[in-house]
Length: 248
Length: 242
Image (cartoon, rainbow over all chains, first blue to last red; front, side, top):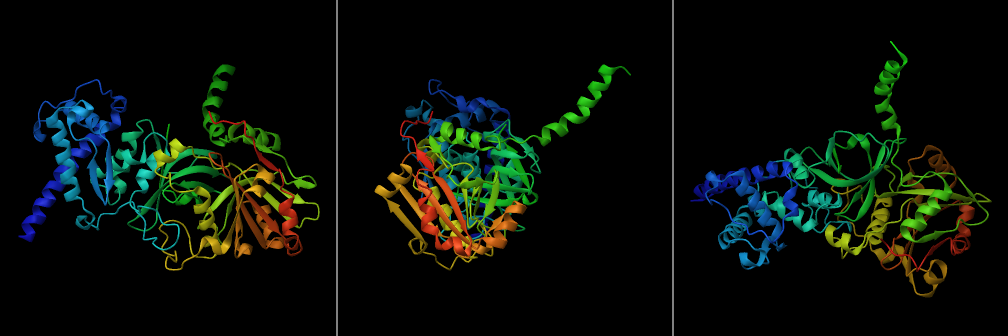
């Protein structure tokens, strides 16, 4: 019984990840989804995942943006109680709420495969500087870049199944989703203000931490960064930075 | 090859180098530019302390840790030194300001920067904190904010800076902090084993961070030097963020 449950969970997880990945990649190319207006009524042409067109996926993401989603005790709650409240079809509303319900069930922290490297840090309990949620550094850094709220970033990442940290391989898609014009580099090149660029650096072989670049002192080779998750500023050697996404 | 072609080739060859050499600075590395920046962007009137010499240092990174790249730090400048060279004072290169809307967007509406930063500095100086997620962090060792930091509210901060409160603390193990500027680090190592931190706050305004370094003799006159900061910064009530 246990193995059957695990197998179903795996299949569902793969399907969900595939679906959300498609949305993520599509999102890289489309900026207009964040300019959606509630005046447009939204519905999908089909609710069969295999038959969904790109347009359906666009509509799905637009609908997602309209909803007020928060998280309590590690579980997502959608504040709206009907599709009419945000001018989307009731079927689409049910489809989304069902998806989040499934996400809550599937991506509960205990079920996550810990072998996959995740962008989260080690425990900081008791050091007086611990974050409120140690696995959301990517969301904080996306918000730190200035174009998205922390709650929306967390909701998006968690809808992709990254509630327990973002795999490094997925960084491009999540950054470009919110910042289609971001410029990626593997090293810090220009001295001075870094304009809250998204920075990722490894903290171990399997974990890393995402922060926002504040200033690069090219004379010393050090970067001062904002860690909004911990509400602090810290220096780091520029060579230690694996990836930087400039927000332009 | 005509002269135009030569100019074209040179511009292609050297343009990227010129661009990479440029620094994207908040203001020029000079006192008037800093003063103007503080006034225009934060509504803070800056008045250098009289009888202190300007070391002409700007955008200097500093860490509270004995392991320079592993600990809470910040960026400072301008930096001034007393006539007797027993006290060195540095001002934050960029006061910390996050608007209410930004705090909400960033999910940090209930957390204050200065408290987190001070805690990080103290724990870094004590060798308990090496940065978020560092395995060397001694998370099981507690530090109590009130054991290190004195918070002054009311008349004093109002009279000194037109501020709401002053958070003041002596940094433990201050002889093990680090300047990422070689000449300053040499000076600090040779002469300045004491450091006092000050965070000056005012509701809905930027937080100013000042560090004072003392020689053994200077440390005995610490209160006198702190008093000299009187009105060296001043929150302009007429200022509003755009």
